[in-house]
Amino acid sequence: MKETIKTSRTAGYLEKIFRALNAKYFNGELEEPIITIQSTPRAYGHVTVAKAWQRGDTTRHELNIGAGTLARPIENVVASTLHECVHLWNIQNGIQDCSRGGQYHNKKFKYAAEARDLKISYDSRIGWSITEPTEALCEFILEQGWEDIRMNRIEWSYTTKGKGAGSSTGSPAGASPNSHSIKYMCPCCKNSVRATKVVNIKCADCDVLMVAQQ
Image (cartoon, rainbow, N blue to C red; front, side):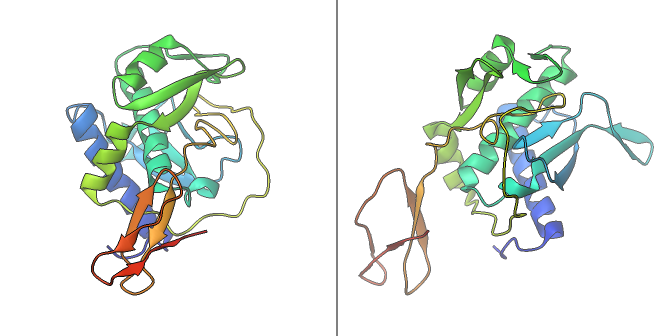
């Protein structure tokens, strides 16, 4: 895969991820949104309750992934995208899954998200919003061959409150700080793998130890 170092390529990559998630977890029944990459320093992403975009004769919801959060491990980016897909599904089916101006996620969101391979934890300020990928979702990501997005807007500070309907909130928002995996790369052939803990691992092709990436 070509490196995702242009915004146009990254947007296309996120669209590809959305379509695969839609097919696997929603039977392809989600209306496709307009996917945007904008600065959201208080959230990993958001969806709009209203259809905010005109496209030809149709109107579309907006699904945004925060520009300052793109360079997280791909499993976290995918989990945030799937989080927003759950909001879209609930909007599409008339299910109110948030209150307090879209900040507080209720158990309707929790149940819909957990049915789709997300681990959801509770925070008193934002409800059932803290989002982590499950092992099943990580396996799906590996099967797809999705790789990290290698670009990111530099945003120096985050707050813990989110605004806007369907925002995934937290620190900065919507995911556990402990959910990150470690990427190991072969210094010779540049093949890479991920592990959820510190390991000593060799590249079988090159017979050298793989190096943890900072």
